[in-house]
Amino acid sequence: MCGGKANITGTQAFISPGYMNTILLNNLYPSTIYFYQVGNNEHNWSSIYKFINRSSSTDDEVNLIAYADMGVSPIQSGAKATIDRVLARFLSNNVTAILHIGDVSYARGIGTLWDAFMSQNEPTTSRASYMVGIGNHEYDHVTGGNKDPSQAPGDG
Image (cartoon, rainbow, N blue to C red; front, side, top):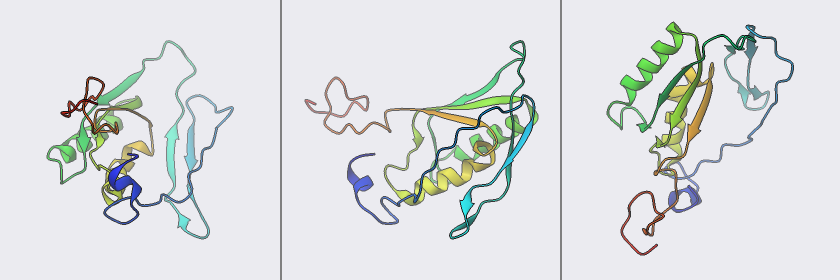
């Protein structure tokens, strides 16, 4: 993401996300529903979201949903069906976390596609822990060679 379109500002390239904030939630109670909202008075507030903190018992099962290579619907065929299945599983099971193991969105530096990808996944990512991994489309390799996971031709 450090080259090409990610270095150009515009709707078909990089769109500044504005402020990025991190918050650490301490002393959460197990098996408790928490409500939250993000935003500010200047740029408006989000809807109110909720999540359930997991049980304190180490004997409880941990249910994960894992997938990879999911793009933006309707540009990448199959994305909408995957999103629908993930949300249905999340709502019908006690899902602890979602793992997106690489090749996230295929936006390739285009800000509007990243926005669309994040919006389409918001129904689950706003309620569950969502962790991503780096796939070959997240690497910034363009010169090939034996360390280039995209298998691009060249000497590296």
